[in-house]
Length: 252
Ligand SMILES: Nc1ncnc2c1ncn2[C@@H]1O[C@H](COP(=O)(O)OP(=O)(O)O)[C@@H](O)[C@H]1O
Ligand SMILES: [Mg+2]
Image (cartoon, rainbow, N blue to C red; front, side):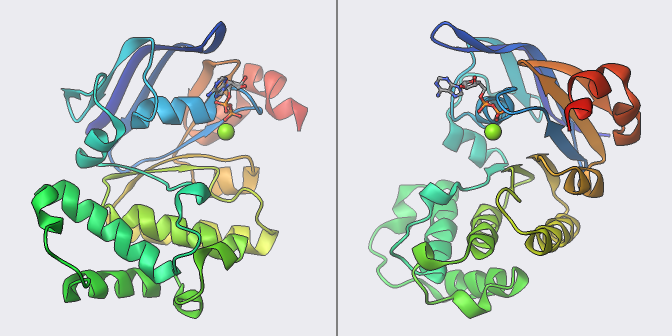
């Protein structure tokens, strides 16, 4: 197996608050690695550190054998990390389709440099075609022209996923992709994520609260508790781990 990401001895504090303490974390190509842990355990912070949205205080992060510890988020995107767009980053007044066009053009600009955007006004045919393909693959047909801000929660999540895929990542990172969904939207989202994973040959890294989603998707499970990893491995083994049962699963 090829190791895509290798993070070692990461420490992250916000002011006096230690959020991650000596966290080492691997991501192997093709796996669906799910991180769980109680609220406030540090899952979102771990994601932000890995994607480069925030810097670690000490430790190292390698991506495909290259040290990316000092690189910014957009530079890591260029190296194949696709972070799920947060709802806030969707342009609320633009239509779902226009948001997709922006995401695709963002990728093209980062691939080709700023000159790619110079002098072009209307979206080119290829960009339109790609946006349409994503719309069909993610079932966004009914909402194409609606302002993104008016979409249902489930459709917003679909749009976020489409925008993440537009970056053509090797690793797709999704932070609680089914949060706030109804049970039926949730199982549809799981189907969609599994589908997309198979179709694009993606490596997945996600956090999730819902245990059905966790065990439906995970090929590896890591448990974070008070900013430290207390177990990591095959989901059924982690589920049986005494410490995990005690500090985490036992609470639910
Ligand atoms: N930007 C920030 N500034 C200060 N404290 C933060 C910040 N982000 C997260 N924290 C703190 O770090 C801890 C872990 O938060 P988070 O990573 O969001 O946990 P989780 O995603 O597991 O719920 C919490 O105590 C939270 O208050
Ligand atoms: Mg979180």
